[in-house]
Image (cartoon, rainbow, N blue to C red; front, side, top):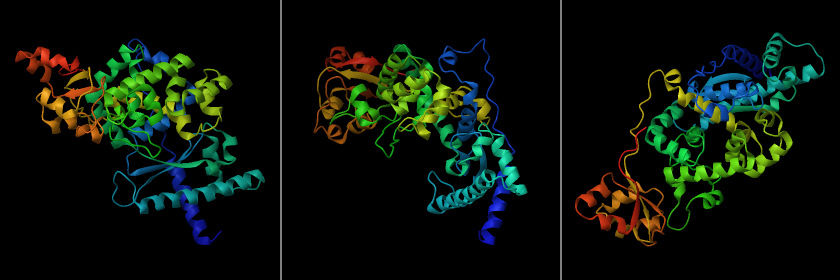
Length: 413
């Protein structure tokens, strides 16, 4: 190794050990007398606490200007939390990505040297002894030294993004809970968008998942409306109803909520294979299952959900500065009885066409202009008071001619 690089590596190792001296905040204590039914259906086994603690830090402790360098299998093994240089925005700059890569590369060299010496039973330097002790103190124990350099990963903090998601959730929490309650499912499933999209309805993944509930096209066609006119993945409430159908079906097949939640990322078939190997032991699956495509995202999905749920249920603990929740959803909603063009609908309900299109994010461009009609069964959002205004004008029959009224006015939390 070149002298300059060796000196940098030693310095990095020292910084790593200093950064690791702080431990994640302890889990919130829940009063069993007031604990909800959902506490029983979403267990948090002791074996999963390292993962839950890691994601608790990602969501509520580390900001977007911080990046954790960590082990991918033993998430309590966080080597360092580094600060990004320069101005920090939603996305990292090329310079910031290169900086993080340099930190990972230097750490990897230190770990490779440690692995080689331990395997050869060679004497360790003081820095290497400290690094070995840090690994041995993790949930992986002494065996985690082997191949530690191959399990390196970086994770950017999401505190600002998660807090913004909490604020947006004020708009949808009541209606999402109502969706799952009416479906006979645990209401705490309403926290899933914190993991999927941070309640960002415009979210789109690199593999084609869209919307607040992040449905892929094939899955969306099974559980909601997706056609030339409408893509209900972009309607938060319609896609929540689709999520309820999906999760109800998943639970019906798997008979385990931890597995059903994990299937939201890994698929029901994939979780059925994991179940065949480990039963309903979610901790065993997370720690030991090595099925096809059961990678970092799938392995951590349930523990991310548990961490997000804990934070969302205790916002004052994690965000003592306060959370400015948005006002609950306050719109009318109707279901079309027949196919109709959007301009006709705007005229019929006496609503400005631009406002109507802006309210209905699920409408595709051809439907927005009327070139393609909205099919029967489409859900339509209207400004609050639209239906009541027609009724007050003695136009109740007109209000019901094209659509059935689903809800009117504010849905309170």
